[in-house]
Image (cartoon, rainbow, N blue to C red; front, side, top):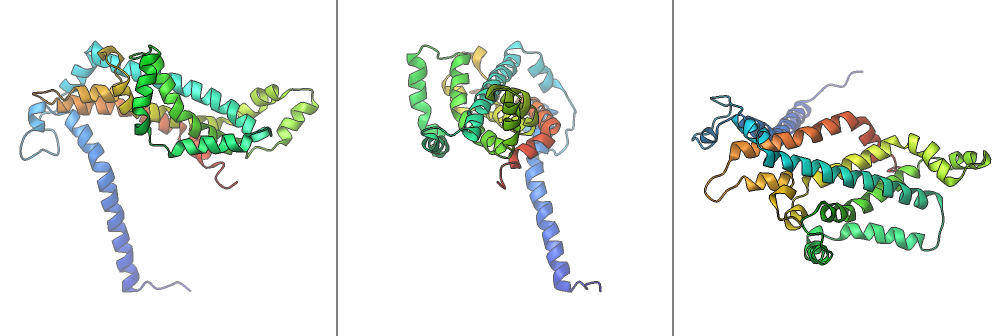
Length: 280
């Protein structure tokens, strides 16, 4: 027998839909405003009352960004640093996770606890120590400083994520390789890695997003304009006497598109990798 909906049930349903619509608007409107403002002139952005749609659709902000070698350098720096950190993080995390997942060794529990405990430390508390370390080693304002610093923050979570995923893979795979005369190294690269693509993709996407969006350490550990990343480049458009809001929005859009593309392409693997070890 079909259940009849009472007025109270209908009221709850309507209230739920209204709440969801309000949440959607709250989340989506800033993105729309960023996109809309990137197609406005700076004069129109400061107009009162503000315009929801551009009165005069213009690409001058994008032309100013894409036609300036200095601003394009910001994108190159972000891609290079984020890409290098992603490759190194995935490689090191995969090796460490395989060791944690497949071998028992002295101090394994303590080391695992130490890795987990690093996630409780606020990164801002390490800013001054890292600055002193970078300066003392003579790598201030270099790619090496950013890459090594970012590795410190991406590796612990990446190791935990990859370990959780590898724990879901049966040990019979390793034993089968051993029976055929293969080593643990063979089992890792010939068997485990090919079937661990979801976990590897999830780790890669997480690492790349974290590095691409990082602002504080990129600001502190670099000085020259040629070493700045996209988040710093956006901040540099806030001048002493003028704010280039349309260019800031255009650079934000250009900086968001690669991340959106990467997530859409890798979404299936990303979700599978993030949830693989949760039940176990």
